[in-house]
Length: 112
Image (cartoon, rainbow, N blue to C red):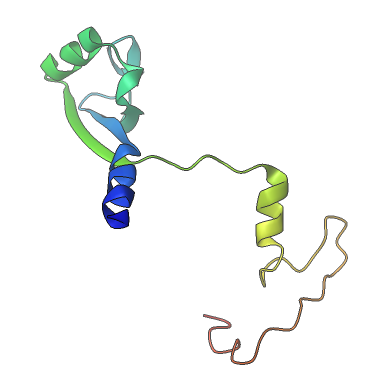
């Protein structure tokens, strides 16, 4: 039962995306110029704009869903999570940090 609840939560966290590919660089439709392939949340456009985009032969329109991006954490939290990484051996002023000793068997994946 818990797995079903988790699956339904995952499904609820998807974003509806519209991908627009311009056949002519800078072609304007729906109030903006389109270059190459660009993706927008579906809510970026009104229903009338989506209809005009779909009807336009100079644009290729695709609709899809993907998981929503997680909210960014405050800088303090992100810094704390990365503080133990092997690549982060210096402080802001350039002084070197000595990493803590790793548990036994921790060297197997080092350098990979």
